[in-house]
Image (cartoon, rainbow, N blue to C red):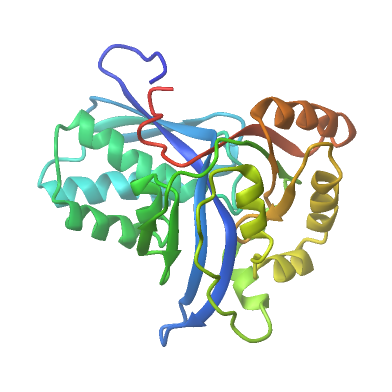
Length: 300
């Protein structure tokens, strides 16, 4: 955990990555059914909580201003109120969200913030909700919140509630890049055309970067084409990442517009990110590493 004032608890809200994303169907209620391999990035927001009278939320960080108009609709506040109701206590806490991840960017920023809120307030309030009830609360906040709460690399199905953890993925470097163009998820799904995809094949051991890239080469992100139609700059981002020295795979995450590149090490990702930032100073460029388990690295 990072240093914090006495009486303050913190949790990291790691960026969620769809290493692949197949849209395999749609429920009668219009929610789409997905097949996706989820991992996380070391790049993160931070949620801090300390005792307070009533429930308050301060938002800071590079992308904090973009959330200033959310008010009570912010997922952090919804998560706090939901956990208070679930555990039968007053929602008393002073929360701070340090927003480092771009808004509406396909890396689960709001969902991972909500999951971090549930974790940090469980510690502050010293509550331990029944796991099934906590998962139900997470799902009520959003389809991606349960997997962010689990914090483990997983094969995910349904609308996000079917979570099957996978064996540890290789420790490799990542480069996240966003052209700072918001791409709302509902608009991307609405723009999707064509038939539904089949689920991806079973994943065998992925102990190395080459193993992982070989497996991912037989998959795709079905939302990439509709996202590119909404934000053509995504093409430029993918081309730029794919052209960097040492990049083994470039792909868009979620509904975009954040794209990622896989590298052999964080050092290589950082070096390539520095080069890209010089040529594209108005893009968000964030090097890091791939995480299979965000909970056990929380102290990192």
